[in-house]
Length: 373
Image (cartoon, rainbow, N blue to C red; front, side):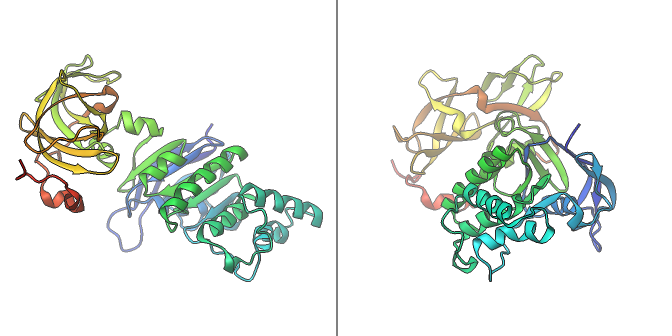
């Protein structure tokens, strides 16, 4: 039995012709961290608000730990929520902010017990020594640590995190996502974490629900998104930049214009499909099955990103910097098969070559020009 059960949820905002969320199902296990990932406007924050009771669905049901919460007010639902902005009481200290909710609700009785429990959560979020620090004198990362402790001290059945790290700088985001996962796993806390950041989702989540246009496109472990994307939409979102038409023989073999490849675990009748290949799955090999010519090269510090032409198709290839190839060079490539997969054909698929405008700012950092010899 799932701990959080969302069944057939639909939500349409007033004035909109199309639903923001339509017929969505989601089941979350107790103690699991599930990340709702997707681009802006896909419905992930709306879903969080429906779970919290901040919005009301048009149809469908939401249950937490076996109890339907559809008609329960937000303040009576067994949840805590952390927003993008900390919303701390600025007139209070770190200690007072964290201890406020259990003190007001009477959840923790007795001054000594309240002080001990508050100190426990202060220590847990690594703010020991900051107990008497005013909220106005905290950094962004410290504010979010207070918010997390304040949400957890009331021991919610479900913790909702709405892009809690997006306002922090890059280094703080990495530090905080590690802290959030570590603390929640230690407590066995069930979590729904909303983000648009793919790297953050992979680092935090036990499972990821990728939302596109109000529906869940794939719900799986982070590893599956990098090895077995369900569709071309998922593949594109997770950096599978190479899309090659192929024929699947129904027995693990893909026949394509750039070569013949064997994959494991694809179940399908013989059919035309799309072979997707991760740029980092390639490695240079003089005996490799792929022979191409370098068209473009972009130095990225720890790697070089190439565009390699092979039998009329442009391949995006990411290699280490041990040897730099230049436009016009012939190159032999092999591929790690964990970075090769096949997905069903979709009507919007086209195999046009990438234009300079599609490359965007990446072209600015090119260290090799086509006219160089």
